[in-house]
Length: 86
Image 1 (tube, rainbow, N blue to C red):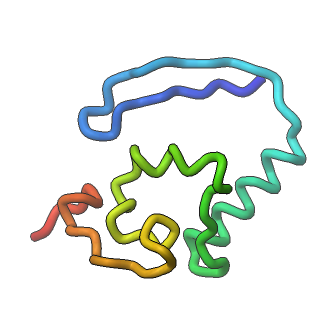
Image 2: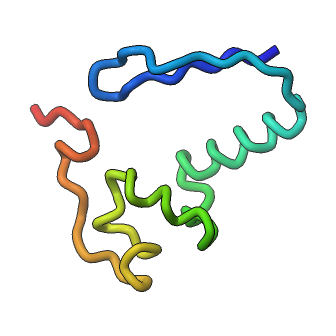
Image 3: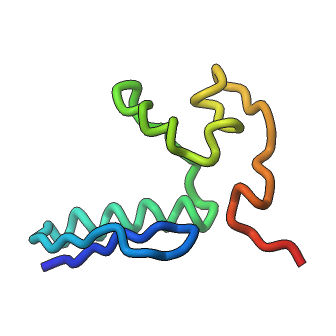
């Protein structure tokens, strides 16, 4: 059984929770793929065309090549990335 908690990033308030059965091998492969990306071992991929509606909610849409005809238009600001500058 997998337990997933959805939290709002800005204030960490709970949005919802789900529990469900899952395929262990599939999840392990998905996590491996994500880790390869975050560790810089894999290039970013974009959502398929039929799922690009998700981009409306992404904080990186303004600088994403998928949303800008293959060209990044600007670099995200640190406050867009939830990074606290010192």
